Image (cartoon, rainbow, N blue to C red):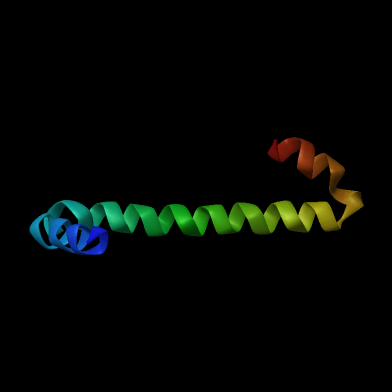
Length: 55
């Protein structure tokens, strides 16, 4: 039922949700990138300065 409501909302407000979905996807990519950087920094004890810079 909840999915149907979401689908109805998406179809009725496609012109509103399209930029929002694009923004959501962009946000997800940015978060993935930040997580990757965080993992990379954690794996390398040498880049403690980089970690300090990121926080």
